[in-house]
Image (cartoon, rainbow, N blue to C red):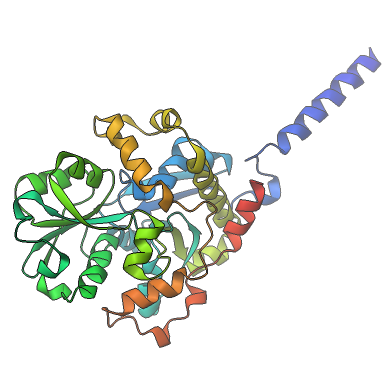
Length: 346
């Protein structure tokens, strides 16, 4: 009997040790300082934020010991307001928000890259296609963006400036990034649109819009910006990162794992993961949109070497709030957390 008891105890210890080294299992020393937190997202139904949705749906946040509440907003600028206001702990939004915040004297840092291309498409609605044939024809146009000041607005402004049209020459109208986009196009509320997938694929497929600019691929992005334009990131106030390094690492682990999953996920895997409400009643369309943007997802969560400089150059070209000489790019991002996260997946 004593021998059997010892054998059972030994087997139990071995089982516990095996459990401790399973992927995603956190040791006591890695327990997040803030296991329950809120993340502000600038348009969760959009494919722009698919890594966040993936991490939540597949339980990657939970695997890291986190209970993350996702608060969804109409655009990245609204999500940033939630983080600045304190109603959200971290944000999921475009990298450029960290640049603008530093220009205001507030220090925010991106710590996991989700998108290496903006995934934003600029197009003209069918009824106006004869009048607006290029970006140079946008003067006086009513252009829909997810929210004024968000990444869809900023990419639009950069592209227009390159074509000789100033932001003040158009009227930007917030139309969200979900079904409200369809209503805006269908009602004639807007002449053109700068937005993300799956909406842009749906509108293109139906012939409702004609695409003029496409940054859903790295190649298309380089044509517009002359380099890698970092897009969706996880970012947080510098104070949050300093106070909660284990929590920040856990968030990075989950997102980099989601990035990795998206590189090879099958169509069936994707449809099983994405909530029905986000499929727009057309799974085939959603899959088409996903394949249109797949190249834009970061494979490892790391900020490309030329990314921050490209972003600063593009944004400061039109926005006087950004003086390149006064921006410390090294303080707007860190690859430390993503590097550790990526190493765990090898």
